[in-house]
Length: 244
Length: 243
Image 1: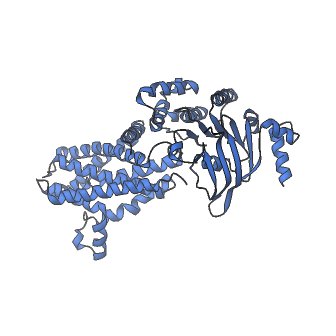
Image 2: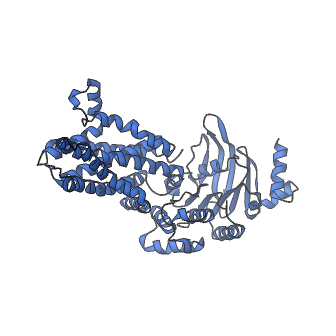
Image 3: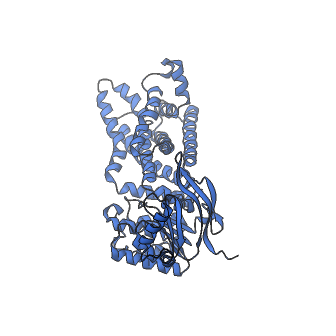
């Protein structure tokens, strides 16, 4: 892997986004807008909102980065740029990690805006503080990016890539413990939740919300999510073929 | 050892899908420093053949060597450039950003980057469009950006899939002059086209139909052998003789 080529790939992806202000605005502002809507949904039950809002920060970046990354990489295939790049002196990891770096930077900005909205405008108290909230949100976004990069290998059109979102993310969302405590679910679903990365992303956010120190469980949850992300990035690189 | 041929293809067969034979037992050597035209109608196998030469196409049987190395070898990636049939550039960044990005991926050093980018912009007559988004320029200009990317780093072999499609005659003429200059300096160019009037501009032609080679020779020799005035007429006579 060549660090310079990773950096220049990330720079190119960010240049593409900078020329698309509508997409950029949607990516950066939607989590904050959705959290604000959620605040008013739970107007009569503010304590419920206080517990859900930080956890949502472990979910929204995954969903948004999954969609944007999978569509971007499918587009690389359909417009022929990936075809061309695969004849260049670059490694597949340069390409994949370039995307991961670009979207991690984007995720940091997205999480910063959403955190500002949660902590300052919506007055939610997060015991763990802003830094741990941001770290957990960025790692969640990295997971969304790597999932999107990996799944894009199985889509031949942007339309198919979008359809992967309900197929891959929603089952994890339903079983991650956000709606119902995991030990209240059927045994099979508990097993499923225990091996899915979104579960650990949401658990990490619970840790950040409820503990004013960096806990061992938080470290464990974040390491699991980060390992999933790195493994999926490597698998994403493997799914790109020099010869087709 | 001095290598005479840029490309050597032996017994090449490519099957697409379950049983579509896109290339059928191709045997051909392509000399260095020449402009070689792969000419044939749509579906003749031109794109599959050039994808095989740049190493992007999985092949079933046979062998392709480029500068005496297996096609697609990592050692070849700095010596072979590939322009795909689609424009294959990023529409949502500027012309200059595209060329810079691909130049950096090619490995052009920071100190040489601006000079290289400016040289390529000038040679493709795109200097005035450098700061424009690719999405906002015309189809012919997009084609030129794609060609500009293929020129990065002065590769020894340029493989160009329909590089002049959609260009006006004046620009097409200019680009062919550029191809001739490159060939004079030793670059080998493989150019596909389904337009027969471009064939006469090549040093050698590989006439393809239904995945098979109809003939491989200079345009002049092909016309002489078939007693024809044009390559198009030769092509039709060769097709009839094979039927």
